[in-house]
Length: 409
Image (cartoon, rainbow, N blue to C red):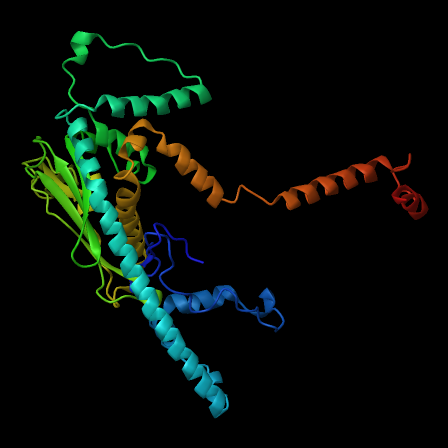
């Protein structure tokens, strides 16, 4: 059962096998169902089949591997012949069931569309709050007394739950020079695990100029992330956007299908491109023996590579498909984390409070919880083991069956 968030499920393009969706919904069922029963034939012993030899054959014949993969791919979705073998009245009923299913799919598509419209309705109500947040963060406006009081009430609750050391008071003359909340978005992003992994030390100097992160829905299915920057020494862009598009037609079950993403071109100032680095290499002339230093620009890790999303692999790019799919999965998940987590609760990420809820979710997913019945069974099992040990004779042998029966009575 796919997990859902905000009542709406969006699946990744079938071409992007394994790409995550906003609610971690699988793009499609595996060709062989996980519920399929295991074969009833006896296991083939390893000595009866030389795996190393087989691997060697495949390694030497990539064309053979490609042919087999193509053949298997062509079999996915094809009928096994079972339906065709059914009596005509039964096949007619199956066709009728498909008709009923189509009506259900239409309703599912309507449901997804209404959920999207509901999200847009409430997003319009959130927008004034986001605008007020941006003004406070950037020093253009101060929070009201009511807002401060409401926030302090939450802080008092936290202090009651956990004793914390009070910070040293800042001198009034120093505090007067501070506008808004410095490095608000950079701090919030560094507390969001998936984003923090992408931010390098070099990126931080540019991200300190980030004044706001917001999003907007498109007229077609999809959304746009907008990063606003103050004037800085790295690039001339005032805003850098990244847009996630979905296909026009809904997929199986009425879900929105992820299509592709597009990012703005960053206008880097000379020698300030954070997505590349310059490597120097010495070269020696074979004839004159003179040496020279050659400088070469190569790509390097940077958060700003986020705005140059990977492209969906073509069918004939089998060798690079796996790596690209992993990058697509990460890229889409980052966009969803910004849209669903960072923007709505930015102040909680800034203070670090959101990490507590993130940890709870992770623990739940990892299966740290178990049924109480299981715990009781484990305790009973431990008690039986202890009783068995205590009933061993002096010679270490187990007690006779009669004694065990007597004890049970």
